[in-house]
Image (cartoon, rainbow, N blue to C red; front, side):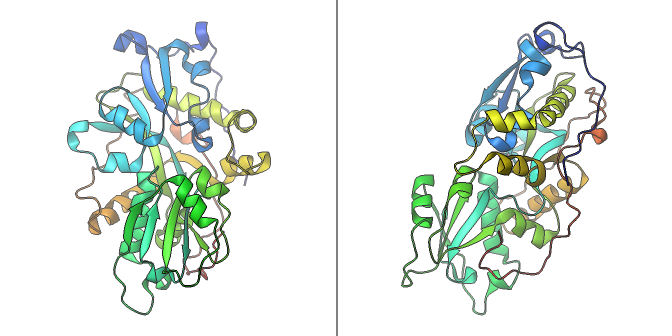
Length: 345
């Protein structure tokens, strides 16, 4: 199914690309709104058109996810596209509020978060973790803790594996080597470009963790969303929605002009943004997010996760969010039956 872009009334542009709406961030804050984005392909539609939509009312800073989380936490950014884990693990004093309607999620395969493993999945002794996404690290740990099906449980009782940090370079190097049969069972989590470009050597199997979550729960998995710290300025949601709307309309240009993961051609990038990644944070995604929080708490991986607090879209003057199409809805059911374990690609 193609992404359906709902036609909205076009906002005429004023000087410096600022539409004549309620985007008066400088007037309200005494300075431009400081926005933190992620310069990855899967987030470009949510940040690409800030200049066009908001002009000088916004300053955009693109940083890695972990750095964005720190900058927002320390008050150096006003709003940022943060990993779900950053929100769930913070104390209530941070006063984060989620911007409704928009996020980065998947239903089924995500293709950019993969667990490469050899040996029986249920007998993995060591797991090397690419820590560039703490949400993906928590999902990996949760799957090993909860053992959702027979592939993870096995026939004999095996304790939790040892989780180890590893560099992206080391992870790719290990995955691309053929396995020595005498090696003990192990797994390596790779994220983003590394997961997409890694070519596993002989003996490795692959799990797409987005697909694992959906098979387990029947729900989408949410990786990141916009969060504001403190009291948001009027017009914030309207601004982010308009950036998203114009970003979705510019997906072809984004694919042509943005850095693509090594080995991903133009058609693959278009398919990835149009059919794999979803940019919605609506009922199904909120259910998935709530379920992830609940299961992390049950497993003891995150103690008392932060409850979900959303900015009031009515008082913040948003567009009609339900008319925004923010990613594909799959009409094909995801099987909850375990696969062979050899490949879920």
